[in-house]
Length: 174
Image (spheres, rainbow, N blue to C red):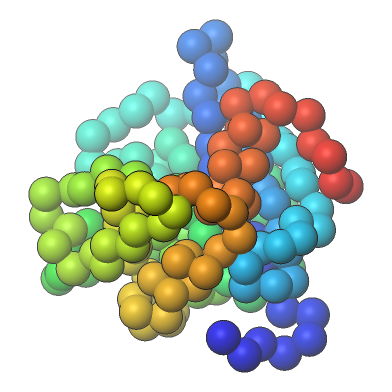
């Protein structure tokens, strides 16, 4: 993909410890392979909405807003689906897109029965695909970006790192 100099991408994830609250994490890059990671950021929320089936975004979006506060991105990768079916029923990524106004790529690790429109991407030697959805760019372009992201594993290095940060790993880049 061809992007202007200074193009800034981010990947986010949120973890909910059993003790309560939420830890949101962000990694940023200016290369669509997410190599190298330029910065890492973690934000803690003391209180979060309880999980509600069909309204996951209501729990996740406040944490994402907190970790993204003051960060200027042109594309964001989220853990999950952008939309949940071919008719566009909004998932987390669609709510993030509406809130932030930037293109969003959803990378889900498990198939969702109604997300028949998601592009399956196999990375590394894994036979299990990742399921890619997008808003603000074509799904095929999003799938190519995820396929090309740095790392030899099923899950790209940037997504592995942001997951580790959300689970409590110490940031390496500021």
